[in-house]
Length: 442
Image 1 (cartoon, rainbow, N blue to C red):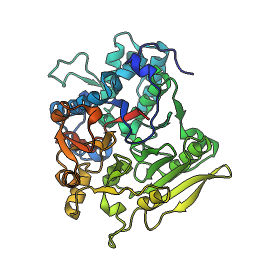
Image 2: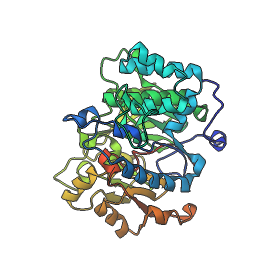
Image 3: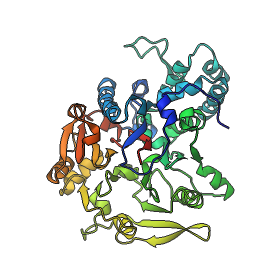
Image 4: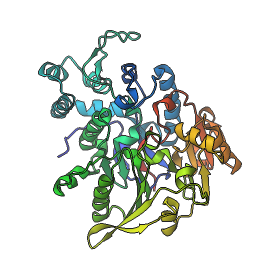
């Protein structure tokens, strides 16, 4: 049962109906997280890529500035009330004593801390805001000076990947799919997000889908991992899900059964991705920015290149009450599966353009990871110059974040907003990764 928390981030956010009909309908509400002290607490280690899922240490001041520019553009579209910070949502639910006790207990068990730490997290010495920061950074920053990190006491590992809020859950229509990460460092993000979805009044009418319930009922023995970057709300009847390094096939099958049997969608298309870090999520290689426009990484989706084989795409539909594969779109892959249901995508933009060299380079720097705030109005890192050139050649306008803020967002179309991302891209995520939309204007 949801807690009766009355404090919310926005009255308007409470009144508007929650709905996510597609990847590109006009943005109304989105959750973000500006990178903060958690990045300063990431140690330089030989196995950073495995332990923290980062290859380098960000210059936090610059990364936060780049993220703030991006958030300013989102607010320009959705309004101040439409852009919610994860830390603010967490702070607000921590104001409820019972919820705070539950969260502290769950985090203490997850991180294996002792009673003294557990009691400190519950004590009145920490305000709700300070506790929220500690649960994200893993350290107590209340006693540290603004420019000094050495005095911070570390209680558990930081969660730097929280800046990629896309992965903490996935909204489809009026339902949210809980994330169950494959990597240990992201478990606390998912745990905190689950409490926000359950107890924050902004999400009061959300249908929460937890496929672990279905896994337990089915006595499944396989791994059940799913992350939001692999889930796309394609249209009101279709969801596309990638399976690979972060989302397992078993999780996709359980999700298909749940979504189809509850009538949330009519079909689920699973794309089988290489289980590699470079292709960690579906949205690292394919994103939709309009009813006829998408960007893709050619080596995994090209139908006309004899040297490549498109990633296999399987369509699940409900047959006699069971999620059943009704189409195996081999060798055509995802585009063949989409064409079967009436989508041809005449405007297909290649990540990195026509050069295989730049395709791989810009896929690594999130050239295929675009976020559409309106139909054909999307955000991309400015460093992906070959991808941007492909859009410009097709008639798209290219504007900076500062230029976008001078435009009327309701009248803009066929526009790419190039945002600074020299530091943000080093975290291994793009514009779509940094957003978790949960309401768009249908």
